[in-house]
Length: 298
Image: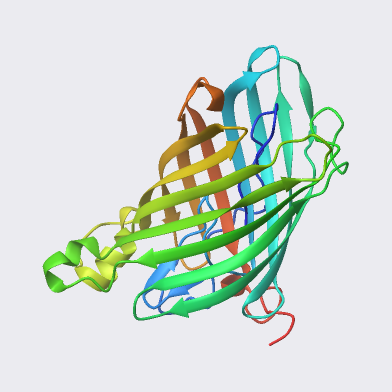
């Protein structure tokens, strides 16, 4: 349940946490217990634009990018972590944070910590559609003075996802396509600090879906468990749009996933070089459904 973060006058420091455990079992949506599932469609936990589902899960993510700073370009490395806990099958809370290292000027430390709440509104199994609402709060003053803002940021967000498994037979090879998106304001509590509007979209082509629900074309592992995708996270503030175009892939199975994306700035204000995101993710609701992955209230 990560959300895009906007940093006025600072590099973008994403939210998201923890883990790198994967089973050797092949990805099988029919036995998966939770995550973002609508009919035969599994929406993966994407890296820059949040998926529309709720789950008991943890995420660890590394990012590197060069961005404009007060003294010229600066290199920024981030280590993001997030843990999401199901309260009920439709409600999840999250906690997360980012450790950042930058140069020009040199600084390192934790960014402000985040807490979030997300509610699964609606799922249409037949049409592979899902939508949810959430709110994320970046708590001002909880991070390092060298990295974090002193004010808080509140971000209510709408999430949605649509798979194309309901297309006719004549378009069968487009059925693995899915689109997800999110949109919402980012409201600051600091006097004179600008607000922003964050939005983003992903386009995915699920090879597991192709193999299992369209036609088995004989892809070997690990390719049969890969979802190529493009994410486009954007933010609009003070009349300027910033963001990136992120082509990459996610390898997924029942218990977790691993992903890699490039970050291509959409303009000079968004960055000066291509960056990278690397993700490791674990689904506690499948790894330990009777213990740590169990909702607090059934």
